[in-house]
Image (cartoon, rainbow, N blue to C red; front, side):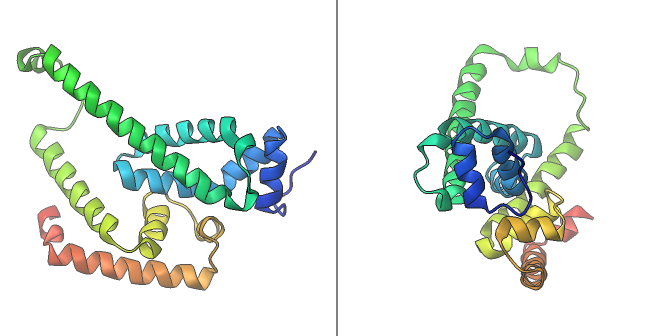
Amino acid sequence: MNITAAESEDTLVEQAKKGNRAAFEELVRRISRLIFARLYLETGDVHRAEDLLQETLLSAFRALPKLADASRFRPWLLAIAQNVAADAARFESRKKRDSSRLSSAEELGRIPSKEPPPQQELEQQELRAKVLAVLRGLPDEYRLPLTLRYISGADYDTICEQLRLSNGSLRGLLHRGMNRLRTELERLNVFSAAD
């Protein structure tokens, strides 16, 4: 069965539940940036968010036959992403505790680093953390469009499709969201720290 871009999301979910991989791939194409944006907001790390996105999609593919209401696909998938992120955070926390007991600072000091100098890396991490904290503090209506546009690099049409917005509504949200983000960053003197 051929899948077209005009197929409704509910129809695609029903087809994917019956094992149609092309329908699931189309669903992934339509919603993956939204899930990535949500995971990035959780992790603050592009690579980690990409890994968690893959785990989320794999989990969703396996559990899709259990989804009772096709119209609840997006919230269901966002909940899976949230659970995958929480599980990963718990695993990382345990791993860090275990590894800190096993390795000494002297052993770690012998490993050559491919990272920027420690001071520069620290400054970049602090700046990233401040911007992400401010972004996380924005209302959801601004947070997701800003993340999709400026972090995951989605174009306007893709964001409109992901968030089910008109182009004008999206542009307004991005404008107001960016103003709020800029105002808060200036209030926290983040710009002067980056100069």
